[in-house]
Image (cartoon, rainbow, N blue to C red; front, side, top):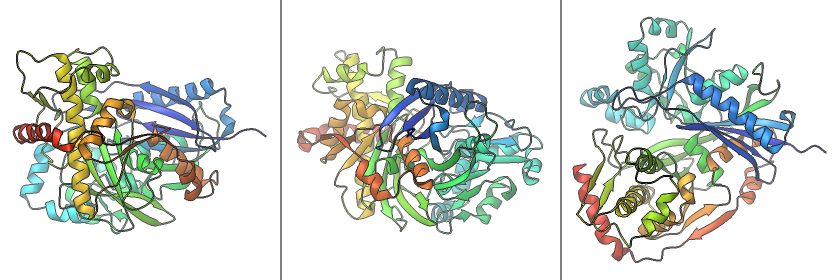
Length: 491
């Protein structure tokens, strides 16, 4: 019997990854292709959608070749994506209106301030679970329609389509203009209680309903591949989910109270709250986790905008390390940062502070400070951001998190994960498969086509690689936390 596989496409901020998963949840092949970010001016971050599509084609082709697998063995395709990144494209030609605006883009910060001053904050928070911030898609879409002559009229006529990257890739793969509830919930246009686009928010941001994708479950056959060249026709496209919700699903955090942190470009913590949305009183977001069989599940989310990107900056900007992996050894070569503090607010501060105006800061430098102390302060800064988020979530949920499942590229860093466990005072658990974002979309696609029979079967296949238990007294870290709190207040 010929083996069958699920293809997961993980379209991220700096590259696209194709992952082939077998029935036992083994990753048979994983190939990444990077593409450039476009920085037109400070605070502006864009992507060329053509470069994104080419990266998807290349990583899928490479994954199939490296595994020696025929594309006809693919049972279904799941897509996960960088959520808030937004674009418009022409209905007939498929040509983009302009470059996509990336989730990190801050050009609409002034517009967000206007909305807050006009008193819209509470109503938007109630409907969407989100704070008003340039992070989300609504003001990006509004900006693109305003700044491109004739765009609004075309959108009103349905001649321009809007979407986050999941919508655009699905349209390219199978011609369906759809999104799932997890991605829709990140636009600031979606009512997370009704599960529909909100007419009042569409009016507020002047977004025509005619240009919006259909909102579907996260696990469903949306269409079949057709005419794309690098894959045969007829493969079901069957799973859609935002990257962080995908990681929550890929970590098998199916029960309320289970939490995960993904250390990628940013650091993203999600805590499953089950079928009831929990309103945060401590700077977290309420978001849709997924919708399966028409039933919504929710999560509390906290985002640190810069995590792995801080390490990239040390490598590419300051050039004090030659590779990202070097930071673990360098940071571990000193017992502490010796008072050096790095607040990695390179694109503002996310949860729980929500300060788009904040900027990165390195403080406490003395004549004795070395690049090792800066490296240690960088890892401290990443872990301290996540600590603030997890502790805030526990207060919102009404119960402390019992363990944190960790994933993403930086979770390979033993020093960072142990530091995280020490700061939180709870176990951090690393799975066998670290690319859980892609795994989540694969699982959802497989469930849709019967590749896996149930979520219970999926949960039984999740495997732990290593458990990091706290081994440093939190009292010993009190000074580090105090210096961090002081630095954040002035960043």
